[in-house]
Image (cartoon, rainbow, N blue to C red):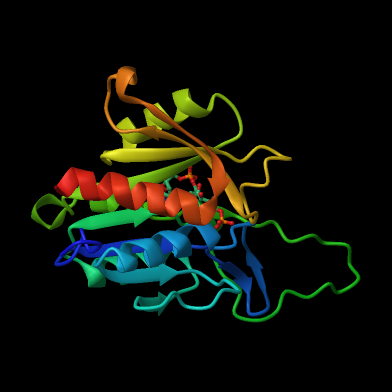
Length: 223
Ligand code: PMT
């Protein structure tokens, strides 16, 4: 129907940061607010898609008409995404922690006056975007990732698209002063093919505008 170009399509969106525990009261996190991912989930739902939003800890209301699954860690995010499959569309907008503390302490680490400083060993988290991109028969028809870069944005994002095996990458500059993490605006470089001639530069706009532009682009893909 008009205005609902994605009716009948199922979408999974990841959003927000992950929290990786150090001990019962401390964690490693990042500055993602969830604004971009939540806006995309809302725009997909407005276009008629059946949307599951897998979100890390954020201070945002649930978008209307979206099923929200709340998680804390990268491993929980991967489990929740896999539980939500199959889907036609996956959009990974979350800022997933690349590393977690290898051995989470069961009790609060104590500063006992001896001057001994904890030595945190890290281990690598699962890569959700790469995992679903290589998911065989359960791979969504259209897998879209983001690339958060502080330099050589397009070049790094192009390499990331190839390495992770997703269809499209939305690259954004997250250098200090860009305001991309946590802010209300974003400038996107869409990389949808190996050939640089099909790259698109979207003007800097509100994150809601980015979400609507992406949904238009997705709708065209399925039209
Ligand atoms: O949340 P906001 O404050 O609105 O900010 C939005 C944003 C800057 C977080 C968003 O636009 C964005 O860029 N999200 C991706 C952040 C990121 O972690 O990028 P990356 O270049 O490190 O990762 C590349 C891609 O792999 C991303 O799609 C990411 O979701 C995915 N990934 C990364 C690591 C991992 N372990 N699993 C993943 O799925």
